[in-house]
Amino acid sequence: MLLLKPERKWSRQEVLTTPSPVPRQPGVYAWYFREIPNSVPVADCHVHGSDTLLYVGISPKAPSKNGFAPSKQQLWDRIRYHYRGNAEGSTLRLTLGCLLSKQLDIQLRRVGSGNRMTFAEGERVLSQWLQDNAFVVWIVDSEPWLLEERLIGELSLPLNLDMNNKHPFHNALSQIRKEAKESARNLPIVT
Image (tube, rainbow, N blue to C red):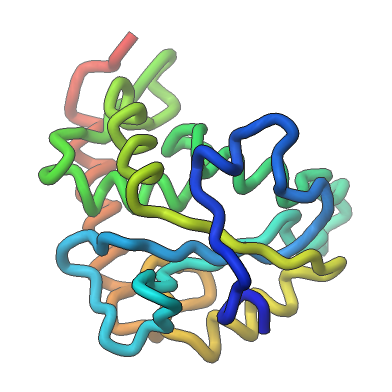
């Protein structure tokens, strides 16, 4: 499978070029890392070259079962957002920021009206860490949620929480994210 044996992995700089190499189609993406955040168990993770696969995601999400309109997001939207967005809209950025908060000297904070949480000015620091350490690959798939479920069931993906509650790191990662959110709620809002 191309996600596990990619011909190449794409850096932040490459993904954010114009035109971007990321297709404007639905699919599955996989994130490989050069440097691993402390405490993340990688003994059973897939390694390709010198990079370790820690997370997979999809775009769009599976269609809603309660009649809501399906998401129109595509690989292009989602991958680019993970590389340059913020923790409010990217579970990958939220997870990495929480794991790297001490190392990068960043902290999850309430921003704007106080209903959103990001790493505020630390998002730039996190983006630089992603530039230096994170690489993404993707495949186009018209029903990516089916492959995502299979990959999460078959691979050790310590940064995935959804559908991955049997992973040995699931509870620890959930607790780390919960504590970061609780701490942010007790701090002043960043305007």
